[in-house]
Image 1 (cartoon, rainbow, N blue to C red):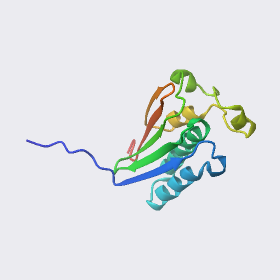
Image 2: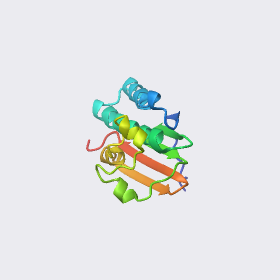
Image 3: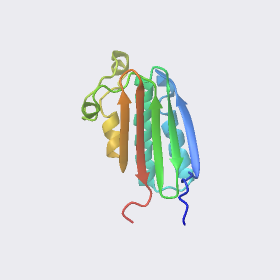
Image 4: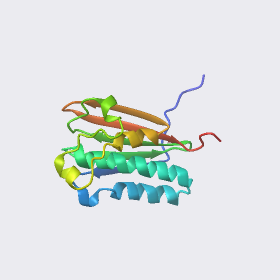
Length: 151
């Protein structure tokens, strides 16, 4: 009888993200980009992961009132990227996935953020995309990129 073992990632990176920390916004995405490049990942994979990480990080900065977490897990065949927060939640996920739809606060829009492309860009660059959100409780997003898709 064959036992089913739980897969263990080769690498796990965790990065806390602070609410309204615009000065540091983008740092997590940049760190992940450099780490994936150092692992010798294909440029297309690094590009997609960087977009996903930047957009998720920005959502945490703009909406996660208690801060949030970006977690990246690298497996031999894929990269799993997670964003978790205890923020206000997404009222209508389908609407939030519509390009250009934004609930960004005025302070973010005044700074040039909140174009309404974040969740759309995460989904667009993911091979698998999951989002669970509950108003007043928070949001959990999972994005997966397969490393050898189509090869």
